[in-house]
Image (cartoon, rainbow, N blue to C red; front, side, top):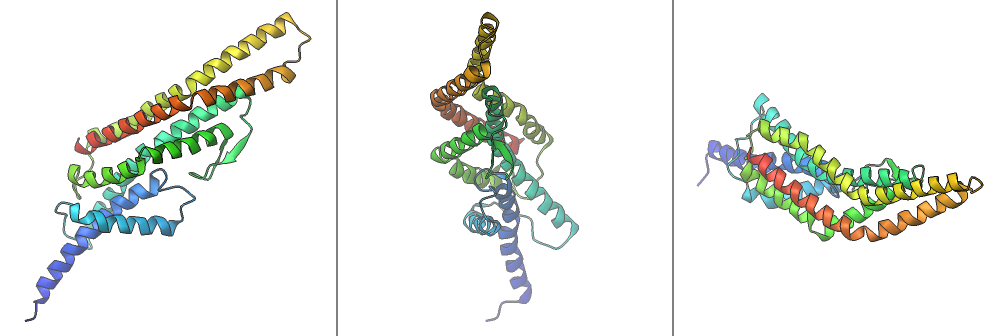
Length: 259
């Protein structure tokens, strides 16, 4: 018994739609999200991961629009990539907050000119920012952030089915989330920046009381020592704050996809 060609075409089109449309959203997340989208991860590895994740998650995807080569299909592709990139961008802003906090602390410690190459972006960042990025990545993985990202992508197909655009309120929430991440950077840098500011004021008072005191010989090593001690004592606060930021970001994305 032979199956008619129109039936085969319909089955092939349906299977193609079930696997192709989710791939673009997953690829958008893998392209931008932390850890997955790092410069150290080769492009072929990201592509292979996106294909494997699509194969695993495609049975969980609700009914998708039929696949066809048309202008509408192009809009759907761009829309799915935008949705995935928006989710990855919000998660990446957590690490951008760590970079901003590290830059603030490094300038206060006198290490603003000591830079290293960031493996996430491939650009130069202060050594304190690099330290925060390494600690943040380890904390992110220990908290299961990579698994939470995959689960968010899986749930996004139910919250926002393929073919439906991200609502205006959802776009505003994603755009406004940068302010929340800046506040997180302030919370990370505030203890060290405050302590170093007090130390610099104390050295300023000492220079007025003893003009012959060489501040560069005393103040810079003392500021570095104080900064490293505060960073050591601040690791527990960094872990708790990073967990809170990750939870807040996941909750915001869940609400934004439903808006």
